View 1 (cartoon, rainbow, N blue to C red):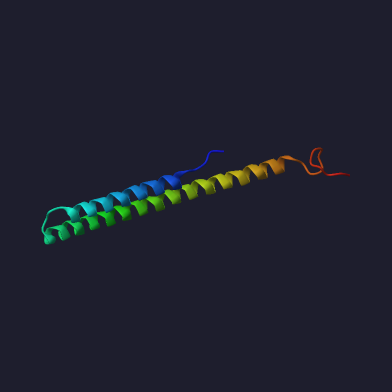
View 2: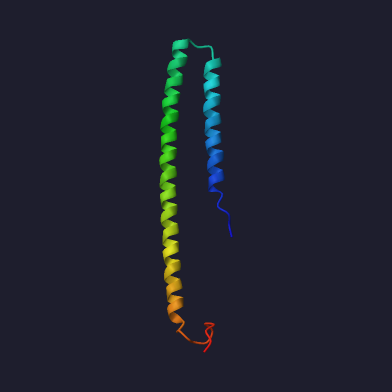
Length: 100
């Protein structure tokens, strides 16, 4: 059975994004710019980061909803197949394990 590693991939992506944001913040703080300008740039980057995080969270929720729908459909089909197979075997017929 194949393993679903989407959670691990998501963790790697989030870690990468957080590292990039941290690196950008450190670069801005170390850059030779006026304090006012640095604060403005940091504020803009923080707003951009928040927007990206909100977008990623929304996409994550949409993904979970799609997967939940897929699983529910598979479960329902499994139940239907089970009921069909159970109905196909007549009670008391050979192979059901019932004794007389």
